[in-house]
Image 1 (tube, helix red, strand yellow):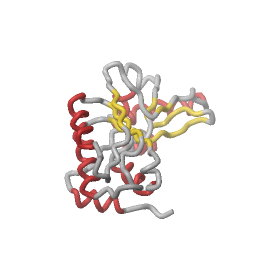
Image 2: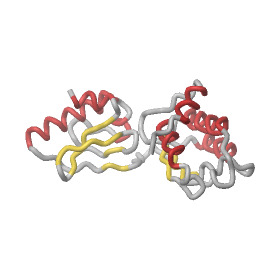
Image 3: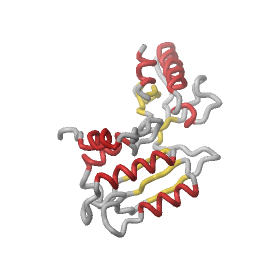
Image 4: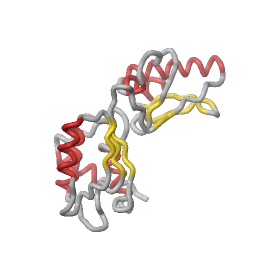
Length: 196
């Protein structure tokens, strides 16, 4: 039943050079041509746990029968023909000159399906992002209903633990969305930093 258990955790089996591997669909997206995925876009498969389970079962059976699998390409993001991508950088949340609110207003206007946050979203060098700013930003991103990829920049790369906590909440590819309706729970989760 591992195929089902992995699907319930948003993880899919993939073919690798050494055999059967697993991709976390919260961090990557696969392009698969197995009979379970045939005719479906990559984003359709990763958004439904039943589709992931069916995919896992098909690949597991194929691996058991052949003893090997074709390699499955895994990407950070795949755009379909109807998808739109927005790339945003240098918001510097935490300094007075930050443009994060106008940026989010613009994103609401263009309704992208995918968003790449390209560095310096937060500014931990010259500024001090407040918890309320972080929570508001994450809540607004959640309401956009957009797939998000995140690349750290020079002003936010020093806060790797904080960014890891944020990644668990919102900055991951895939179907898991942050639960931001209770700000206190979000604050607690953001402060729960794993040890070195």
